[in-house]
Image 1 (tube, rainbow, N blue to C red):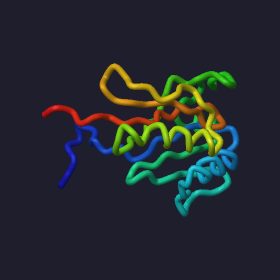
Image 2: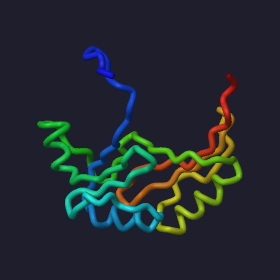
Image 3: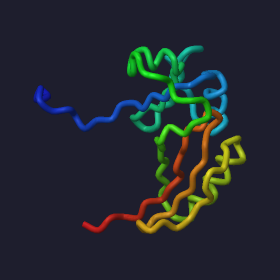
Length: 141
């Protein structure tokens, strides 16, 4: 089946985040129990999350490709991006959040029942990337 040249397929393949220390990021996520893809190396690491990869590439090199000529984010500044992990049940959120913190994530926001009907909490990896650990209730048809 050929793709219409005027549309972009709705197929997310990867999210790549700039990183200052690839080895530290790799170690952190492997501590979460994630396995790096075989083509990861000292300069690039990716983790396959059921068909979508989360990858880390040196910030400066990523900027050369994706934001040539633009200023890099200031050190320690939040990038206004969150990534989310979806859990099968409401009661799974607290345990997964606690496990993430126990494995080295920084607690950002403890799990709460959200106004949209779900439950979620936030943690950060060593470079400040935010992860939402969430349960999203079934949406009405």
